[in-house]
Image 1 (cartoon, protein in one colour):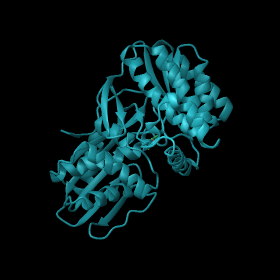
Image 2 (image 1 turned 30 degrees about the vertical axis):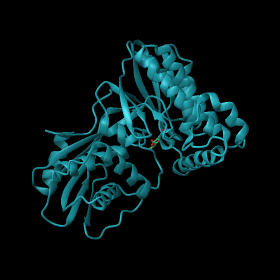
Image 3 (image 1 turned 90 degrees about the horizontal axis):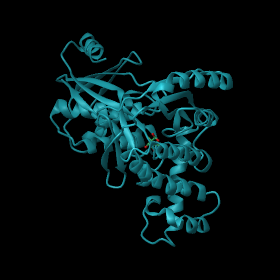
Image 4 (image 1 turned 180 degrees about the vertical axis):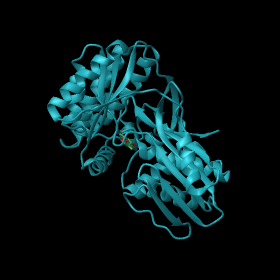
Length: 382
Ligand code: GAF
């Protein structure tokens, strides 16, 4: 991919670029908890976004997207990022960097990647992190990784309209080969835990669906949590987010919240507990327990948090029934995208064949399978 990006850059701009790479991410467990300052357990993957970049001695940014085969140019003195266009991610990052006082001047950029579209591996976060990493290196800004992740999150809020948490850009920026990041989304610090699964491996099944309500439902879940915190703070003084409620307080929470809010709060409280249990299980090699936690997470996301869909439920449930599968759950924001499955190496071929047949029969869609390799975070390629 690196050589294709370089070639494309040379053919469009005829100078030698610097190349930044930022990976997509998976999430082992801890879903929809990041925006409530909770705990998540993501890791970077080998697929990602490449951004080739070079100064152009003007006040204009000239962009080319290999995926869209499209050019886009904007003036640094007057530009307005608009929702829904790939160039918005570049303009969004530039706008935030300029606002923070970084003296960005004109550059040329070619963007390309190999993250399957709609797979839920978070190509948009990888895109922002690749752009931020590239700009930082090109102009010698030395922007800390955490700031790049935070700008990526803010850009998504402001210009894509999704009130996402920090997990995706953080994992893209901080990923480590062979390690998952147990991330505390209050203060944004992490512990690296070796992602060793012995005779098992992680396989993603891409449902190839993305239901249209995803973005608005995502923001609504966030609002429901904020409403619960407002109600609960009368009885739990000092709480800031759902992360401040312990598992042992669940019964009390049930008495205080209206019936429509309690299941959402329950997911937050139990999912944070599951992340810690999963971290311990992975450290001690208790893979059966780890798999059981994946299943419990899916059930909670589907029944209580209501962010799954028929396709994801079908894939997870079919997986639970199969020999050689320790666990399975929907991954990411939901309403489509992938399930993540822990499958015995010797059973992967059988697993993929059976899932393909069953899913095709039920939904008329042939799913994609991605065997995941946990890889390093963003970098400048030599
Ligand atoms: C999306 C968001 F971008 C993340 O911040 C996170 O909330 C995730 O959905 C759900 O865990 O990927």
